[in-house]
Length: 224
Image 1 (cartoon, rainbow, N blue to C red):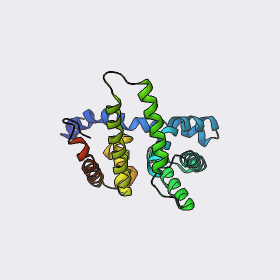
Image 2 (image 1 turned 60 degrees about the vertical axis):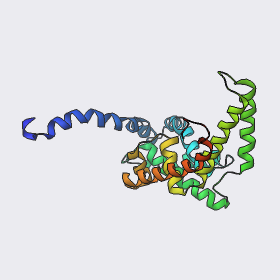
Image 3 (image 1 turned 90 degrees about the horizontal axis):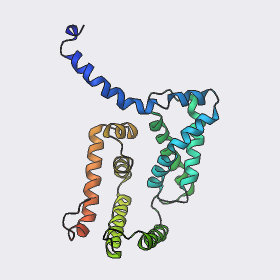
């Protein structure tokens, strides 16, 4: 049997476990999805618990307005629940859910006519609270208020650089650097070739590095 396949059989047998392993994570949702399709609400609640934070984080990066995130996330899951009878498993459940979240966020923003960027006042107040808490309670291992301020400056610069990106670049870099998805997964989510994904991520990184250069040039060895 192996000789009939020539050189293809060994490659298939050695590569197959790796491919199966990569595909198994999304497929792990299949039993829950089947139960939801049979009317098991508890099964859908388990899916919500599993993916709620990831969906909220994605929406937060897209909308950049903390006040909108919970409502859009809730609407995303409501739409997913209503549409799940049509889910055929041709893609990972999270891929399908992600697309619903993106469409829901875009619809909500259009209806409310709000800007995609978070107001600097909301972010500043949140960052001030975090900085105060860290300065009072977490100055350890040589940390100083100056080093925390420098870290905050870098973080704000990165956020501003991401906000300034086009939607395609922002979405690609967020999925890669924040969500930790593979290039293949991003290509599937964004419905574009892997080469396009790599190009968008490269261009996003270059744009962010350009904004960071004035800060990091004064601190040898630091890089984004």
